[in-house]
Every structure is written in structure tokens, then in C-alpha cells.
Amino acid sequence: ANPCKVSLDPAVCEMVEKARRVKVETVWDRYQAMLPQCGFGETGLCCRHCLQGPCRIDPFGGEPKTGICGATADVMVARGLDRAIAAGSAAHSGHARHLAHTLKLAAKGKARDYTVKDKAKLRSVAARLGIPTEGRSIAEIALDVAEAALADFHEKDTPVMWVATTVTKKRAKLFAEKGLLPKGIDYEVADIMHRTLYGTDADPVNLLLGGLRCGLADLAGCYMGTDLSDILFGTPQPVVTEANMGVLKADAVNVAVHGHNPVLSDVIVAVAKEMESEAKAAGASGVNVVGICCTGNEVMMRHGIPACTHSVSQEMALVTGALDAVVVDYQCIMPSLATVAECMGTKLITTMEITKIPGAIHIDFSEETAGENARQIIRLAIESFSRRRGKPVDIPQIKTKVVAGFSVEAIINALAKLNAEDPLKPLIDQIVAGNIRGVCLFAGCNNVKVPQDKNFTAIARRLLKENVLVLATGCGAGALMRHGFMDPANVGELCGEGLKAVLTAIGEANGLGGPLPAVLHVGSCVDNSRAVAVAVAVADRLGVDTDQLPVVASAAEAVSEKAISIGTYAVAIGLPTHVGVMLPVVGGPLVTKVLTEKVKDLTGGYFIVDPDPESAAKKLLAAIDERRAALGL
Ligand code: BF8
Ligand code: SF4
Image 1: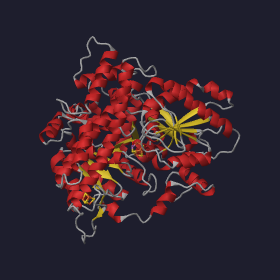
Image 2: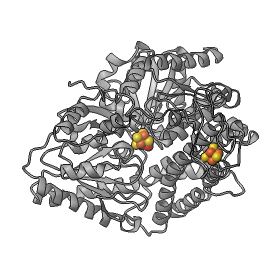
Image 3: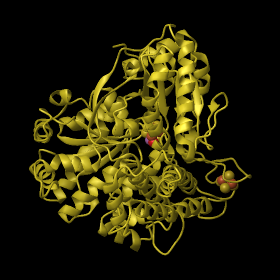
Image 4: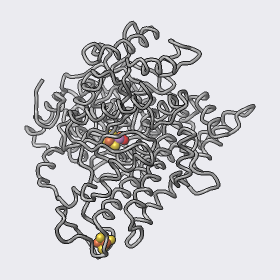
């Protein structure tokens, strides 16, 4: 390995070296140039919500103590946090709305590249929503589910169904009583924009309650995203694949799919297979599709497509010089990719109306013409390969084995091999027996402020040794997979005895001849909903609520506003939720206290903000033990 300061991933370090050599500017260079970052912004004490600003409040308690309009520090940080939650919610639900439109077109037979792949999932989602399924065609049910999804965006007679029907009954009741049940997803996002407008909500606690409700609208967006993706593209089942830049092949047409929505990437994967012969005619060994970020997770979970890299190191995938095309949809795509792509001879291809990048080629992707669009994209990649052919590339020879694909359905199937009647019982028995001390969900991004993967790997190592069952999504899953946490061969080294025995028993009962991986990959960031579904199923089976379970979450290297909205719904369903980077709220003492303590009285969950992985792990373990004790375990 080749240690460097910016990342724990040796492949990334190798490419950072190369970037320096070939004078490609990286995210870490720009971060250095940005230092020192503004202390007002860091603490959340900067406001630009009206044209009298910008206003700044002294973080040390000196003057000025309010903005020009009189907004206090707590109001300022609460408004800022609310807007971040609204942005995250808008993004996840925008992704879900896109899928709802796709499902609707598919149901009407207007998008021939899409069908209902998982009819059982369609029926179970319909049943959950109270949509009749008996004696009805798949197209009819699909249309109703798509309409129900679209209806959840606006205010109507019922609350947001993707919250009301996805949390425990007790929690749905609590949310209703406390005014936390979202009325409509878009309604809540708009409500945040309204109440954070100049001269509107000036009560920090009231602002935070609005934020909590909008965070629950984000749960709806995520859950809907997962449901509709599974219906359209299939519910993930365990797959064996690989991760890290070593999955690139010098002699193949290398195409990276980057962004989030399988509406694009799933079709690219299918078309790439059909176009193998075209690639071979151009002198390539084939088309090698690899993933970056969450769309990478989507196609890994469903098709075993290998992951190239994640989040903060996305530029490094291009620095290899081996990528012929990077195809992006939306979210988490660094604008800098255009510059790196130009330097490295990679074609950057944008596809969505809301995500255009100067310097990229734009192909207007639409569901009606998806297959044709995808063929055009692969053809561009083949052209790009022809130009690259025979030239040297620098592919770090580093990759890890990954077993992924742990949807809730897959987890239940695996457990059913131990107890077909009552699949959750073996899991609960092991939690009671202490072989599983608790469960931790790792989610969110890699932040340039943290040496890449450092927090994720340090906390996961510690928790696994303490027999905590670990689930992971998004770039958190990416971090853990690139360090071997999803290779079953490493269970012995990583896990405590109790956990090792459980993973082995489940693995062997499923004919794997060994354990499940130490970390279960449950999917992309919208798939944090799958972790919620597991928690809700276990709580229902035990007759308790989700805030009583020994379940915690950690966004150890969070970046995106989406990570903030996810953290918010994790707290809303009652989870102690760790964030490993500073949140821009610390300038507001009341807000900080509410988020890290007081909210517990309302939802049972709370934020733990701690940049130190060792002490964060201790706090997460303490939270797990507190809950075990309360359950009498
Ligand atoms: O939605 S973990 S960097 S890719 S925001 Fe983005 Fe963060 Fe990755 Fe996925 Ni999620
Ligand atoms: Fe300043 Fe108030 Fe305007 Fe914000 S809303 S910029 S604090 S005057």
C-alpha cells in the first residue's frame, strides 16, 4: 500500500500521486486552497435569506448578537438546517417522482424499455397502501401505485402514505399527535421555504419541528425510491462482485455510471451487454460498465456491476486515464469532472434536464427513448475507446471481493432458512442472547475534511468486534466495501465471536459454505429505507417501537444535504444518529441542545456529533447498551 494523507484507500493514493504528476487539480487541492474556511459559515452563523444581509453573528458570544432583522443565533442556524433538510428531501423525492413517472409510462405501455420486473413487490407495496390487487392486471395495479406515489407529493385527504404506512403503528400515531406526519412531500419542502423566509418563523424550536416533519417527508422520498426501483428493476438478491479501481480493464470500453437513479443506469447496463460485438469490432475486449456513488450501488445490488470508487474520490477514477465515458444523471456529481475528463480524454455525458455541466456532452435522456439514448451513449464510449486504444493507462491493481444485494427481502429469505415460520425469530433470539449486541447502519458520503474512509473503517472495526451487526448504504457502503468489509473471508478477522457465529450460521444454512460478509450492503442512499424497514419489522415482531431497539446510525463522513435529511428521519424514528463532521448549527446553543438531547423526549432519537471515530464508537455502543438495558437485556 501507499499511504497518503487524504485517503486510506491505496488506489486513491496512487491516483492522487498521478494527478500531481500530470497536474490535474483535485478536490483535495481545492480544499487546501479554501483554508481557513469561514468560521461564521462553519458554525451556521451566516444568513443570506434577505437582501439586507449577508448577516453574521459572532460565534463567541460577542457583538453582533443578532442579524439586522433581529434573528438570533438559534433562529439563524435552525433556518439554515431546515433549508438543508428541505434540499435533501427535494432531491430524494425528485428521484422517487422520476421513478413514479417511469412506472406510470411503463404501466401504460408507453416506455418499452421498462416493465414491472418484480410483480410480488408491486403487489406487496399495493397491499401496504390499501390498493386492491385481487383479480387485477399488473398494469392496473402498477398504474394505481404510480398514481398513489404522485399523489403523495401534494396535500390531500390522507397524509403522506409512504410515511404513514412504513413506520410502526405507534410511531404513525405519535407523529399524527405531534403534528409531525407530513401532509405532502412537496408541501413540506415548500413549507420549509415559507417558514424560513425573511420575517416568518422566529421560534427555533418551532423551526426544528418543521425540519423534523420535512425529514419525514424525506423518508417518504427514500422509501418510495426503493419501492419503485425494486418494482421496475427487481428486488436485490445476494450477488458476488468487486470494488475499487482495479475493476477497470485497459483493453475494454470502460463506462462509469455515476449519480443516483437506476432509470438511466439499469438501461445502460442492459444495452452495454447487447453492444459487446460493436465494442469488439472496435478492438476492445468488451464493454465494462462500472459504478461510481449511488447509481453504482443500484446496479451493483441488482446486477453485480463492480464499483469503481465513491464520493470524494470520483475524480480519481478519471485520472486512471482508462475511463472512456462517465455517464451521469443527478446528485453528487462534482462539476470538476468536466475539467478532469478533458485532461484525461474521457467523455463526460450528462443526461438529465436538471444536471448540465459545461464541457460535457448532453444527451437528453427520456423514458420513451431510453434504449436508443443508451445505445448512443455506449457508441460515444466506443468511439472514445478507439482514440485511447493502445495508449498507456494507469489502473491501480487494487480491488476487493464484495458480496452485496441485501434487500430486506433477501435478509428475510436468508433468515427463513433457519426458521421458515418465523424468520425474524433467529435474529431476535441472537439479539436477546447478546451474540448480536445491536445494529448499526453506516450511511452517507466521504467528506474531504476527513481522510477518506478513516471514520467509517475505524468505527465499523470497533463495533464489529463488539458484535454489532453492521448494515451499510451509499458511499458508506462504498468505503467499507473497498476495505474488504464485504468479503466473507474477512469475517474471522473483523467480527467478535458472537457475531461471527451468527453470520456463519446464516451463511451455512443458505449453502454459502461460510459466513455472510461482516457488513451487509443494503443499497444506495434512498435504500436507507431498507434499514428502516428492517427496524420496523423487528419492532413490530417484538411489539415495541423503533426507539426502543438497540439500533443506531452513523453518517461518519457526511457531505450532502441529503445526509442531513436522512439523519433527520433516523432521529425521527428514534435512532441515536452519529454525524462525524461538524454540523453548521453549533453556533446556536439551544438548537444544538435540542438536536443532541431534547429531541429524545419527543422521538427517542437524537444526534451525536463527534468527529473522533474512537469516541464516536464508544458513544454508539453506550447508546446500544442503554437500549438493551431498558429492554431488560
Ligand atoms: O446519495 S452517500 S456522496 S452518492 S449523498 Fe452522494 Fe453522499 Fe455518496 Fe448517494 Ni448519498
Ligand atoms: Fe440578515 Fe435577517 Fe436578512 Fe438573514 S433575514 S440576511 S439575518 S436581515
